[in-house]
Image (cartoon, rainbow, N blue to C red; front, side, top):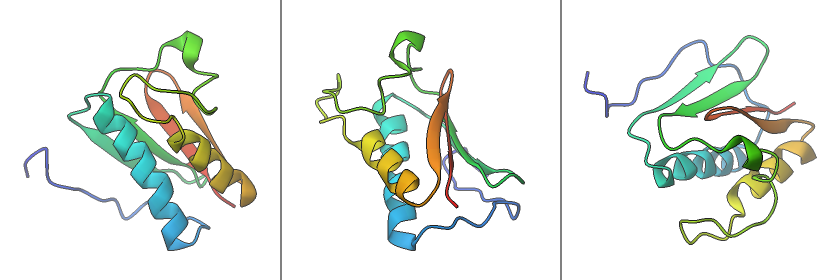
Length: 110
């Protein structure tokens, strides 16, 4: 299997989000990884119901880690709304999203 082929795990937890909203969250996280130059992205699930999206792209500097979920202009010319949208979707459903440095986004929906 090449590193570009998708792999999945039968251990991924069920996510309590409508399909369209889950697609929006994952799309934004994957788009951010690609914008950061990632050549590898891993999505993993855990028994506690969290989903982790990790990549090998440019890491978020620690001093910016608390601001990335707010509205801002990013260095790639984007509006900086993707993570804000992810957080809003998840919080409205009783969940949340956070960053574990250097570059793993973790989310949970209830």
